[in-house]
Image 1 (tube, rainbow, N blue to C red):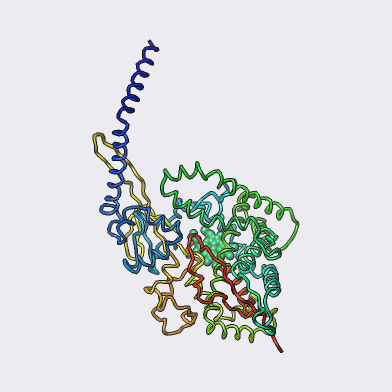
Image 2: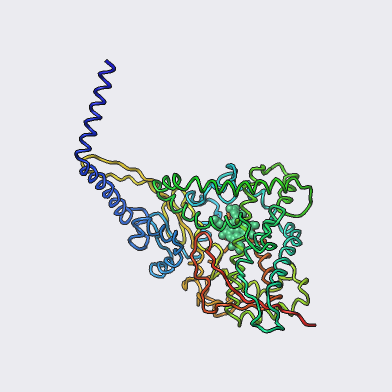
Length: 542
Ligand code: HEM
């Protein structure tokens, strides 16, 4: 009986296969038609019926995510967006579910904590958990209860007291940077043609990685001493583009599955190697009985006097995160500032004279004394406006029920029900989230927000009335709200100190004066190209 039943099923399957074989072209045609019809229906829906249909944007970008993600992966998104904002205004629909804003009030609406309003969570498709070591959350990608808890545990690391006590460690790393550059720089007393050329951007990367490594792990990566990248640091740079590609691929679930099969293994192996080094370095630091005022010391001190604890696994994940978050960002801002100053000698020269007159010796340049250099801070801010370290958006999901952003009502994501009828009825449910954000570089370089937006002029931050109409409140390089940069104070202090000491020590000159160095591809950060400068040592005469 059972055998007859099985034989019947087998015969039917066999017949179906024969039928399919005979009609293979019809079947292929049928499936292609279904897919095409599905796509066309989706594009039409996105353009005409989607809850974001009323927002302006180019037709293809509103219909499909492909143009936005392609531009993103190619690193061209900022160039494309500046054209789109000029054409469509302060809010542009850059993909079916993504809105880009450049109006200042978008910052508090999206990123700040507003009593009585739901927060905008980080877009889970772009904030990867791959960086978690053995599944332990880091403050950057964590949500819900983990984020505020980890943020509280990390706060003492960035307090004013901690910063003051970290000064000797920070100064020691800058000493090494300056002495290594002095070895390479020419002297102002010799023939200028003998002066040496350095790729200052790479040196600043080495310096900031060494410095943060020293603060986080209790030892530097030895980049400055060796004059080359540590493999771990090189891997971080290599992953900048990979993270953007992975984020783009996650927008297309079928492609993501393929990516996981083809690349996922290699990617995870590289991540595990990277993570193993973190584990070894943190274990080594924890085993040391020392009172050196680094990040670990402040985390441990806080735990000794409070009930809240950071597990060892969380220390691995979060110390690793601090290295990634706190090194390239500062190096980028520093490189950008030196580039802009070298290009604008009329700004550089008076600033340099001021620094050299104010500080009789280099040793006088300290955390405390740099606070009296408003022109230096203005030079840094103006460069971060034109070339922000976090150039693209930090995407947030619109919360349940929708929310108002920069005067526009933005609905939350929708569940699309697409019903396609051809012979059979195919019902497809697609969950789409609405994502919003501000692309910093686009907002800061827009003439809508800043007068002479492409002109490097630090005086706009010093009360020059020409710039009274500037919307300075759009400038939030460290973001705002509960997930803003926890290291802002450290970053500002470290950057001003490095700049002041660099400018005190060296006269700087661009090797290629015509080249626009900031014209770079942008992913999570810029893909920096070599920044060649000629350095001449300045010898102070009494
Ligand atoms: C020029 C230097 C820096 C810039 C422009 C910068 C910018 C930012 C921005 C825009 C965010 C928000 C990212 C988002 O919402 O996705 C952020 C977050 C963060 N930054 Fe920075 N940063 C800098 C330096 C640092 C330094 C020196 C550290 C620490 C050593 C640091 C640690 C962090 C951490 C831990 C977060 C995540 C905070 C959270 O989610 O609660 N950053 N940074």
